[in-house]
Length: 177
Image (tube, rainbow, N blue to C red; front, side, top):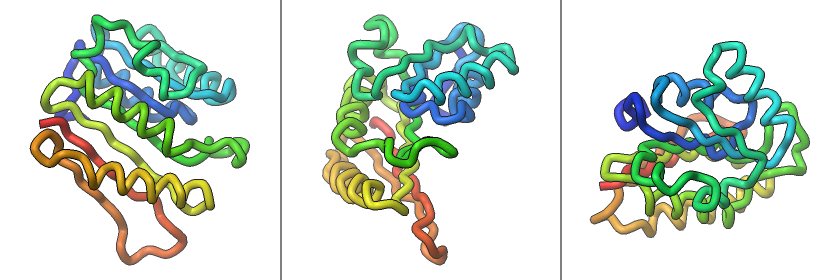
């Protein structure tokens, strides 16, 4: 992400969680950039807002209590071509309600929107937690989606521990060519 996102750019935290990624992205975009953050849970917005206020970076963000599939209707059109990075931490909110989980259909819709808008060199990072039944379903659908992306338009990398037990999370990174 440090390679792709420059000061003044736009970034997307597609799953706010507890705000760690939003804080990271807010530092990368600098005072002239903007981070759009999405989460359906009020608890995630509260945690993220508190973390950003603590670091005096709230002014660099737009926090939305919406699903990430609403990127195309939530981000200002003049920001579309400035989106150079997006992060998704999939699964459920750490310490939250484990019955509220991300779904492959909305994640894929959000990824497709970002890939359409992003300029060449833009990067999306998907951190896939698949140690629960919904996570396993999402994993399978996202792996198929990513594998089928046109190699002439995208680089797709799959980072995974191969010697760990208990379904450790793995990463799919997509770079627009």
